[in-house]
Image 1 (tube, rainbow, N blue to C red):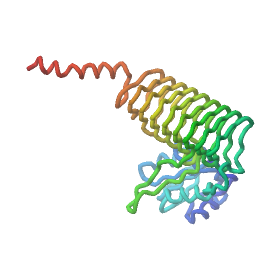
Image 2 (image 1 turned 180 degrees about the horizontal axis):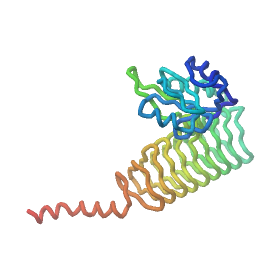
Image 3 (image 1 turned 90 degrees about the horizontal axis):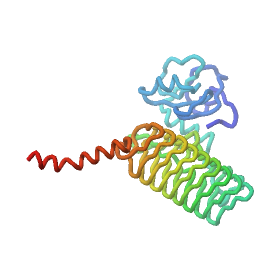
Image 4 (image 1 turned 180 degrees about the vertical axis):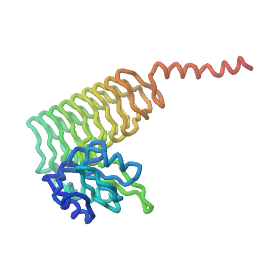
Length: 309
């Protein structure tokens, strides 16, 4: 998430009422999660296991819950609760904006696009040319849709990320200030749910086609010309490269990469990154031929036991 204008380290510390390390005028231009940070961004870290990763990341400001040595050319924000203060910044820079119309007055809708009755188009949404948005579709604030897109009834773009911190008093939600971005020629079936990024974008690239009842988690990137069949569940921060085919009821764990032109066969469970140009099956998913041979061998076990008797 980029801020509307550049801020200083002192200004950010003032918003958070926290101490800081670095020059007062140290520039801050945005905030992001660790996997998408860029120079000028704030990243937060609240566990010693990840201190080094955050301090060595591309982020130039680290929101941290311990006084540590500040790396060269970086700034620190010292907080007793970085998770809470990251939420404070999200609320400050991307506050919730109540809807005042079914199609927001600030939304921009391109020539030839049809929005069917009952659809909701949120604040600052941009929709390109020649799209068809069916009834009961909800496009939350700040989402970006390209040209020639079809979205079928009941689909929701931009719901919050499923991201919580377990505290003694209950689960504390990490607020979402990101977007969903669809490139040109994307089709979405009915009752799909695509969560927005926490601070960045959940992105579906050009030409990808998605069937009914598919869930896509926050900050996931789906490549060009992918095919995703119904009832697939994709967790957050997944990278699916170009021309991947995913058949029905596949489940994909968070923060992994699926190589280009891979084929994931129905009901497979994907718990680790997969190489391109191969077909996979089973749980845990392995190359399909290998998995089928294993299953055939397992079916032979009763007859082998009978012979041994």
